[in-house]
Length: 318
DNA sequence: TATATTGTTACACC
DNA sequence: TGGTGTAACAATAT
Image (tube, rainbow, N blue to C red; front, top):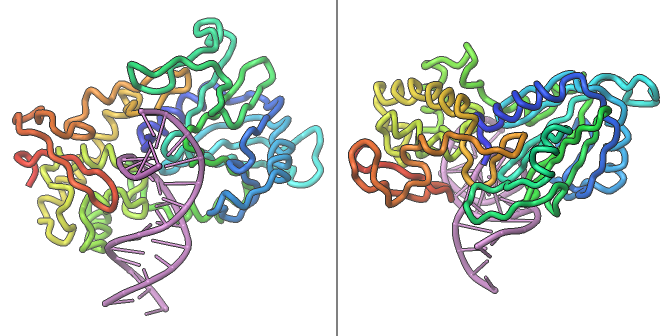
């Protein structure tokens, strides 16, 4: 379940490994998961097989200039097509959303030798090893030099969308995101006013609203609210100034620690070499319903908010 | 087989 | 009408 720290982990690793590589071939096994064009594709079902062929043709021969992140979206910046110009020959960007279960595995000769091409891609002691490509591998990108990037997605909720580099600022997903939590423009005052605008909303849902602040999902909203000592169901209008400040105060430290631990491997999240993130053992409340609070020993409780499970300590959080 | 899962958006409603 | 809150949606493992 990738949120900002998990996406940042993948982006950092891919940027290091892919920068400068040239795409040699692309195979799309699930045409509905890819799209081409500057317009928003809100309904991926409409994308046809013909678009998948265009997707493949447009990618081939391009060089990866870099990989970056906005909210939970990965942005691969690609060079202009040099050998075969035709149309859309300028720079392109590939936007990728992992949604719940998307995974990138980058396999070069060294990793292939180490793993034999077999990976345990689910953080569960009983999960079987799978060989890549598996039945959940939907896009395979091969690079000059012999390395391969696999895109897996059990649920197929994710997408890969190609847009023209000069059209990036017109992509609606990107336009509508709120501030990045580590951006200087994200201040206590801006955060508080965004919270108050959603006065009737439970504070957890406001924290998860990408227009309020980008990149926070179920895991880290629970963890931030635990440290801020605020219950997830509290209406934002009921928060005191001190509570608003406490929530803001904990956003960056919680995300920073998770990035340092290479993310939380809850369920499907894996790093680009198939290994797991180490943040899970630091969770205070997320996924710990019925277990003892690490701070006071009270049993962690859970409620449903907007269809999501919110975990909290009834003693530590008010 | 029904259920749980989550980020995002469509849409109803005030 | 504009902003907000709720429900729906995608597909699969268990």
